[in-house]
Length: 324
Ligand SMILES: [Zn+2]
Image (cartoon, rainbow, N blue to C red; front, top):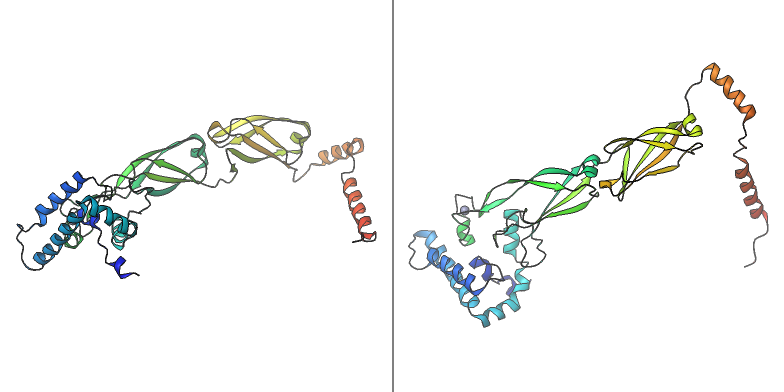
């Protein structure tokens, strides 16, 4: 790494302000730090040494940032570097805040994810989510990092754990893996002292009978041989209950019925695919009747077409190959 880059001091960090801070904000920050670290503060031993170092840094930062020309020059060279500076990475690790800011103005967003049942996704639900937040330590958050490390109140973290429970509204019809944004409900940004957005990825729990296809919900429903042949009304399950639906006479296996408005959030449909289940045993009476049926059956042999096609393709293969 370029030694010049390694030696860059983050003057904004030292003064505890954002890179966009106004002159007035800088002035306030400097005044507060001067009161804490200025030459009038008497300390002994190691603390005194650290204090002098901190004061030098503060003055150096102030001298550059309070001068519009010097500040511009400093920003031009250093701002891109400071965005990735080691100090900030370390700060992010200590506070657990991921630095994923969209722009320099926005505090970083807090990512979370949780799982809802299909029923909840269809109807919508209010969920509670724990946000692992932290408040700035009242004793040391405005001090230099070197002093922060000595703070007993927060054990050098610069912040105190302050978890919150947020109630978040999952709208009806949410999709799997959809990201929902809740402005200002995320963790506090230790630099700007503002709460970032909470971004929640919703995952829909797999269901043993339903699957989600966009806004539609799909389900396979078994019917008897008689229902499939004669048609009629059957009950079909929906993600939130059940519904009575009509099936046509001679409904084939795999036929799909679309039930309008019974999908996700009332926007999609419920797609019912029909499966035909044959009886696993027959009474002697049934066997007699089925045999009788067979004698009057008008159903053609369903394998005729299949054999014709196989024969055709065999003949094509036997014919001489086409000239290249
Ligand atoms: Zn502290």
